[in-house]
Figure 1 (cartoon, rainbow, N blue to C red):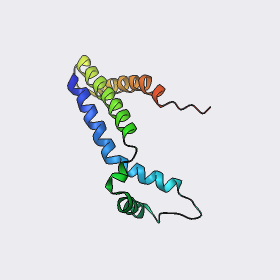
Figure 2: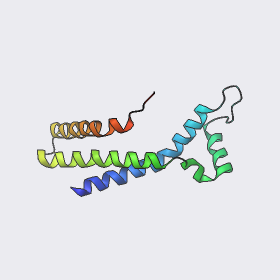
Figure 3: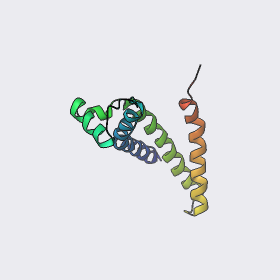
Length: 119
């Protein structure tokens, strides 16, 4: 049971570590001045960040996604694993029910965390 939550944490952390540099590059390309762009493209942006800030520059702002996605994946893996154990046989219907229950619980817990106030 706890192994499902740990697997979710590890999976979430691995996903963030792999994907965060690409998100950093995407955001930098999106926010640059359109009239006078700082980067010529994706690869140039990667190179510039590494040259000017070292490879750690690709991981700026890592804390929030690391904590959030690790927590979210732990919930999903844990609920789905527990639901599959309760349902018994590994059938497509049981997989669907376990996944649906994991998604429903994740929404109830995570939506308030991701809500942004615009006031």
